[in-house]
Amino acid sequence: MSPDRRRNPVFGVGAALVGVAAGVAAGVVADRATKHRAAMLALDTRDTYEVVPDEERVVLTDDGVPLHVEIDEPDPAAAEAAARGLTPNGRADELPTIVLTHGYCLSLRCWVFQRRALTAAGYRVVSWDHRGHGKSGRGDKDAYVIERLARDLQTVIEEVAPTGDLVLVGHSMGGMTIMALGELNPELVRDRVIGVAFVSTSPGGITLANGGRSATIGRLLLERLGPTLLTPLSERPDLWSWVRRSGATLEEFLVDQNSFASPVAASLVRFTADILLGTPLDVINDYLVTFDHFDMRPALKHLRGAHVLVFNGKNDVLTPPQHSDLIVEGIPGAEHVLVNDAGHVIMLEHPDLLNAQLTQLIERAVRSRTEHLEVSQQPRVRRTVTNVAKERRVHATRHSRRTRSAQQRAGRGA
Image (cartoon, rainbow, N blue to C red; front, side):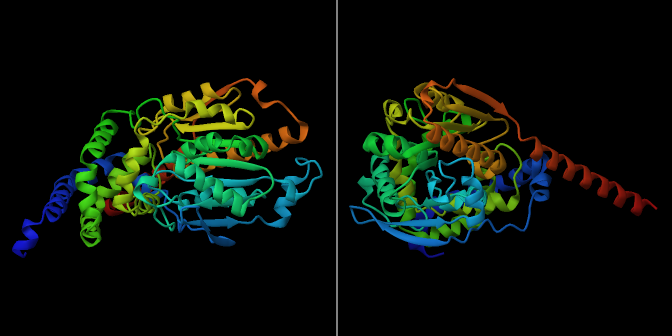
């Protein structure tokens, strides 16, 4: 090792991180193995978690940032079947466009299961990457704020879904962006948005990442040490890649623990980690300021004319259920679905549950538009659900593994 590199403070940070990874990795592996590592492996499939869009577009914002947008078109027969009995004239072109907006440090790739399900159900789906995320371009660091993201969302809608009804779906920061859009352009929301889904979202007004000791400590470290650590590391992408490779086991463990609250496929943890930690470090750092004193509760009034689904995990450490409670309080008639054994990245953890809820939301919204029903007069509904189908799969795979192990031991004993 050269003397210059040894004195480099950035290298010192990297070495420290790797040292922590090396010291903790053995315990991490053992801990995860005893809890649900077998289930994670058993749930694995050959899925590549990719969607090939029908169209890719670059939408240029008014401040010159190129936004990456993907459009998925439904099969015409599926769209006609969906429209029959729902829309006024039973025509597919009367169905709403579904716009998916991802959260902080994610990308449009996180919607893989929803994109598949919604197009299969007959709907046109638009997904896009926030500035600085995924394949979108970067903006000025001062533009990494929720209000600016709302303008970006408005631009995406104007460019790729300029007419017709809309159902907006947002996860975490994406949900905040939808709230800010209501404040920015209440006429657009009033006239065209018939449904909204807030997935693991906070309207602000209370502290984020208040779902337990580890989340609180992580938030405080990021707030206090983020600029000191992330900025210099962002200037050394080669070092950051080395740090990630050296601490891959710890990286996957941390992503698993903070994103999910039930077993998921090991390959899905890796997929999620690659999205989250593939976000540029300086972008991660520059977005932090937008969450300080964030409060969009007054903006919720602009969404009262739409059917609203509030969907979150009971074990979400980043936006715990009390955050969703604030949304429900601000929108009369909102339906609140709380999922047991679910964390923050719930659309990947429990996709079937969310897909079913989104499909029902869209159908309710279209029928209400057709029948001119007053949405705000509907009673609030709160339901707590469990992904029984997933629990059965995990139980079955564990039982199968135990049976095979017993047979193997019996065979060796013979």
